[in-house]
Image (cartoon, rainbow, N blue to C red):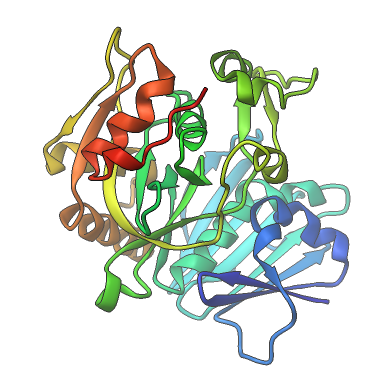
Length: 337
């Protein structure tokens, strides 16, 4: 069964022997689904249930890494192909250059299709079409066809800050899964858009933002978070995943401050260090070819975009005015009640 998705004009086709295999990936892709297309897909992902396949003998072992879900994954490479194997659980092989990937989940382990392995598959699909997935939030500026990226390590407050701004007239593209696109670089430069991944909202965020708190239920995970659907958030704000806008600013979320918010220009070299540290990992074998291409995409984005550091103060309801002023449209920010 073929499932088609629109990745900012690029077509992703996911073939699965069982529709249930696609379901774990819909947390990232559901709102991007389109009717079947007669066009050749830019990238094809095949999902199977069966025995996870090891890398071919001639592939070079790179390293092992533990994934957030507690699985130990072996990474190998051969030419343009990358091989990821969690023994007896899941395997993924892909070539961004050839525009194809295959993932095989062992029976009973299908849920891992939508975890770290799924992110790698989506990354490959994007990378094959001159797009790069980054760990960052993105918001469209009020009444302006332009957006900015807000980035910081996990736990630094991206989701809280993003939701606060979205309550003040900014449109939320994503709180955590931003795509840098160079598909239209010749005409509009770098664009950004967001994957339609529902935010995980922390208990503290609900306390700081009552409009969000009223949307939350009684059940929390071990980290004190719960997922909130995009449609639920739309009752309080604009949510626009999948729509690309020219990139107008890169904002590093710094430490909280007492009193007034502060946003000021920062050295691009300093911002670049933070950007790469949070979005690119280097093994003992150095950067692979596709990692180097991502690095160069980061270089181009930072070189062509104003850079800022933001320190959020105590009054979140005034944050929108400060951001809009720094990025050129102070009069358009709408303060929350």
